[in-house]
Image (cartoon, rainbow, N blue to C red; front, side):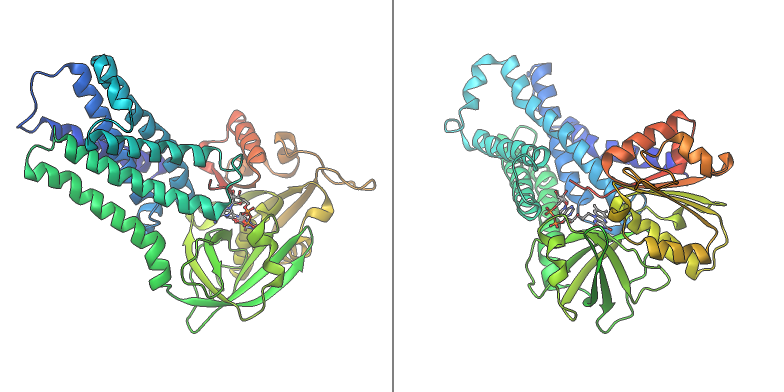
Length: 438
Ligand SMILES: Cc1cc2nc3c(=O)[nH]c(=O)nc-3n(C[C@H](O)[C@H](O)[C@H](O)COP(=O)(O)OP(=O)(O)OC[C@H]3O[C@@H](n4cnc5c(N)ncnc54)[C@H](O)[C@@H]3O)c2cc1C
């Protein structure tokens, strides 16, 4: 199924699911004699709550749901849709007050009945979710704390919203209607707690051990993992995995990294990691033999999903890692297809894995273009920012019309994405990987 058709199918399915409460509202017995605005506000609340509940499935990391697009795209969708849902839920009390201004007293969090108090707590959790996610960096919340807060607030939002729905009782006026709301809510809360907290601790799956940690140019290290008593992990070139190091069973620390090694070698995973913070900055001290856990493979950024007569790869900084996985895999497969790789960073010294790329150039039909932003004085190659003219200088026009893979810092990705679209490259042929899920 092509991407547009499958996109339409998934969006339609999503819309049908979030509309289910509206159909349920129509099944008698229904409250009568209420204004349209009041009914509309209730409908918005139900749709918003269903959207929040569906979020739990989106982030559960079930491969069946994420495979068509990749978990990274699903997480971006999760972010956008959460804001829509929160907007709808906030409109619910606003419209109630517009309809009946005397109901403004419901806004007193200490007054009112438990139906309104639980609505308050749920809304507080939702607003907390939005603020901590949109301003995580400004609030200096480290990623692990943010994730813990995110799970607690998410569960709190659904549980208290469910209490509100049950106690308000208007459209849950029969036992089966109560059940229709309560059962999925309990199931989804249990699902997310199991998938994201209990399962990794109780059923860690195959374990791995650190075989090697190698320092590289440009404040990077190569982390090599080998299976501990199993056959390894099959993956597509370019995919990524969440890595946890150490013995602790309950930990919120797991960081995503793209495999850099060949997909033909599932029993030796190599990761190229830039030292940017707590976890990545501590890797040099990790001893060989340290236990590792892997949640993967994830992601849809892979040449194997998009067969073509040739490829253009564009990497900014550590965005070179999935490209190395493409190249290592193609070399192992003796793949003869032509590849143009543009590799950009601030300076040549900041660019790790140049030697590996040269060696791969001997085995593949690879044209490698290094693009330092600040080149040395005697540099005769390309420099500055990658733009359309630079692409055209190195790649035959018809190859630009083929599959393009871009991975790098967000400003570079959005600039190149815009340029490629302006120049008529079809969206279907452009594949992007952002190393930023939050
Ligand atoms: C799909 C994907 C693939 C990636 N592949 C690579 C790679 O091959 N090589 C590489 O060097 N980096 C890669 N990254 C980025 C890498 O995950 C972060 O740099 C790393 O997790 C930072 O952790 P830290 O504790 O050292 O730094 P921190 O200072 O804690 O984090 C720096 C930033 O990294 C991000 N980050 C931190 N922890 C996580 C987490 N658990 N999940 C998601 N994002 C997080 C946050 O945006 C955070 O602000 C990838 C990221 C993603 C999303």
